[in-house]
Figure 1: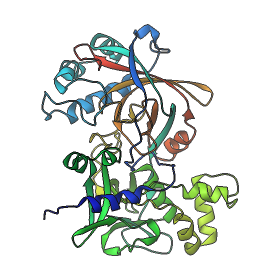
Figure 2 (figure 1 turned 180 degrees about the horizontal axis):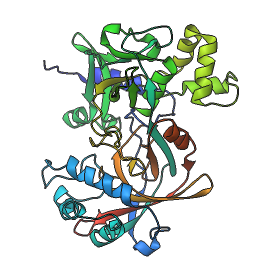
Figure 3 (figure 1 turned 135 degrees about the vertical axis):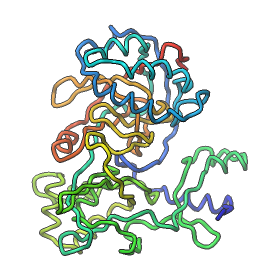
Length: 396
């Protein structure tokens, strides 16, 4: 069914975005105003740690990026947007060459096929990390596994604000987020309900888990769910209700409710002690809500599909602001982790609300499971960025 939305309806959905400034790394798609951006010529010798960095994960991620755009028009730009990168055809020679690189030959491959450029820009200059949780789940609810993993509702629609901006030649709409989530009510689109206002039906649930584990999946954007028979599947991001994320964990910390710090283990212990009503009230401090779809895990070594539509590679993929970096861009970051240099080559394959804050803001994918989660929690530092562009591609 096709629906025609009025400008008033689109404006009503805009109101759904008014909330706090915090964002999780995974699902939210809120956009931010443009900041300064430029690329400056550089050499591989200018990049700290280039000669010793492990480039193998980046090559795996690069191959996956090439596979993901194999059917894309060669004359089309790289997906996602960005301010540089040229066309798919400009990257084709490097994609072909990448298939024949032997172990240990990664550095030679990147040096032969790319030119480095220093990234300059405004906005937030910071690296964080995210991961794919693995949580216990059940097909039916019980006292412990009481929170549903919900499929995308049938009444949820997306309003393409950019299309309205062009149709109405409206500058105010051009400054709004490009896409907004709303609820279809008859012939009108209204803001989708906040978390506490959702009337969730168990008919739309495909699995059940501990409420804190489900919330963790919603923060990360996706995760693996493990069942008692030993099987696993993936709860992949399907949709989000449009509200900016506000950390329920942070709200408890600020209220002095958590003993020992704002960790997921402490949040779960608090939930178990206080019970379901208190847990529900605590989670309602966050208006954002993420819906999932269940998927088979084809390759256990690969992560979930990011915004670029390809599986993420542990320590080889990074979430970026696609207003500046296209999906598939190859970037080198020089940051810090646990007091030591963090210097890695990564491929832009995802985004998130907390990441859409300029060309120097990134979220590194650390992998799946508790160990990856504990490691990801410790990543939070400024970093310098370089981007590698194919020798045949224009820089801007």
